[in-house]
Length: 304
Length: 304
Image (cartoon, rainbow over all chains, first blue to last red; front, side):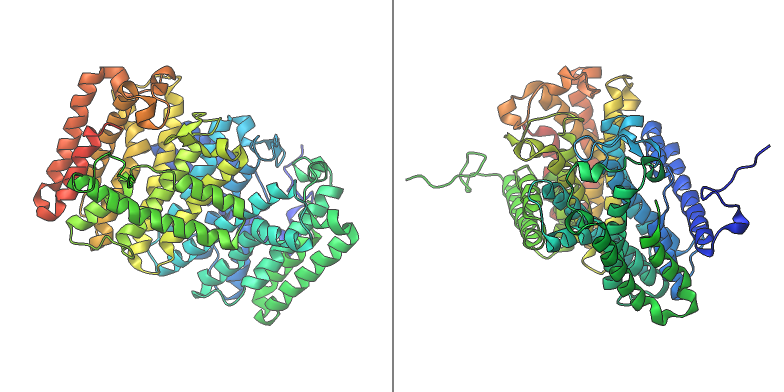
């Protein structure tokens, strides 16, 4: 009889320290996400909160909460259950999830598959998917502002700014299908679409641990762009099975990406340069920052 | 040569104190909404922020900001430009506007007309309308949390809670078309859909002025239900021209409303009872609360 094996295909003993770190954060994040959705379901409309839970608990690397916790940890902050860092990571994951649910809608990317499962509007219906995204956004702010401490106001302001910039990026992304942007245009688009929330993860981790963003905004943005280029490269090279979403869709849609503009090899070089610039900012942080540095490397090296 | 006359068709000298009050708040609110949208448009994607401005500045009674200011004023708080009350009113109007833009989408109510103009997805496109709503929601929290004072964290938490309950109400409203709810079901739906944000307006006004909600939550909820019943009655009796949106649509869609369940006369009696219960809570507040009491009466008496 076979026992369950982790997603990586390795036994826990074989998994790398980074895999173990990601798994630990993912477990904490998912526990908190489930608890929030189920608490709501007891007080509000069951079907809506079931759909929220479906959206929140469909897997995913939980990269943003991991970045929050790794940055908080780099400054000696708490990152386990009950910590400000984990709470912010969970709120960030709610915002990220809302953006995926809305992005998959027929009027946007019209995707039927996300992380290997039917997207929310396919599993439920379009109106429910719209409301799931809407509810997830306010829920993220509720979750953060439940704690009446000045640090959480700062984190909520950071989250709100990141969320608005993300929407701006998505709008630029739609426009880019018609008026093909140049390199600067694509980088501006990606700084908003992906960079803003990843930068918020890094600076939010610093705020959760120390009350200050420690000047990490620019490094976070660079990591965000590196992440987005890696994503665009994977869309070119990975299979639908690997990604859990349709591969090759961006090329088919004529999306504005760095690989499309510069070719895969040059795009990869740029992603590595952005990653290295981010790593430089994390260099002086000592041994406690090793998970953060590993994550920064993983952002570019990942295969799905 | 004719000079511009107010919307009511009366000269300023003839307009009632409440009309003058509503006009004053609307002017302040619209000035602030326009300033925010235009500042964003200088830094971000023009077309998105144009669409946001289109959504925000399409008229409307600005009832929620007026309630915020009237309640703040009842406690002696500032309500003009630069006040906490006005800032909260503007944030509340952003949330309300996002809900209208999403509610009008084809997958929801599929409306082409709002306040006498094409809805956002008709004037622009569906994807833009989706993103306009998404951006308006985070913008509301950004706008509030720009001010680093404990009062604004409280207000943001209140707004987030109200926004989530509003989405729950909209989901119940969709479900109600299939499984017809009884009286308690309809009241629960309306407390969430409309009551939550109107209650947030009243308690937020009290918080803006005093730092405490002054126990006004229940009165705000009652006012919200009265407002919703009045809205449902208007859908039955008013013309499309009066409403600036299609009249009679709720009946056609078989929406769960109190007039549909109890008949118009009994529904109006209930609206008046809820209004009177709310007025009771405002009774002890003295002369400064006159705009608040007038507004509470107007909620039921209005003809559009």
